Image (tube, rainbow, N blue to C red; front, side, top):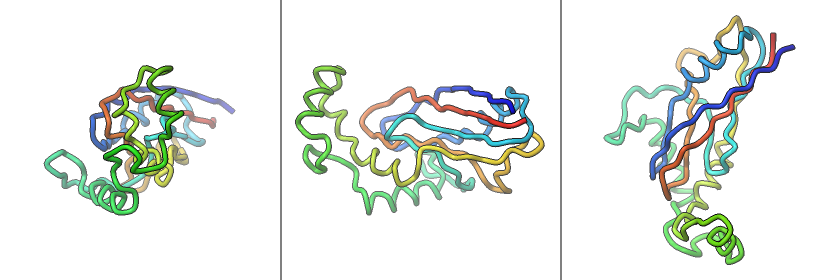
Length: 165
């Protein structure tokens, strides 16, 4: 059994962002030489998610597929965007102090609890069966990477691990 691992970057914006990474993951599959097995797509970032959804075709003015905007609208109702200090218990005073002193973070960057909570609901990885070199995503399935942290633009890493033969 072979194991292949590749990492690629995604540039995200200072708002909830969605990147269709299906083609980039397929490139990893092609680079792996593995034709049958499992493809795991993972985000190590705790305010980001990886999930499967269909391509909505229509988009908002911000170029967000309508089905993903619908998801943001629903998530906003159950996990409101963090807009001010102490809206959520996290981050507490110790975390805030450590983030600013040890990691040189700005205080306003800590207003991302909503992103952490939303990413837990959506999940940080997907595993897709690989058959004859093709991911079994179905007719409309796409792989999306989402950054739920609305405090600043960032470079994020997506990890792809393929196991099989």
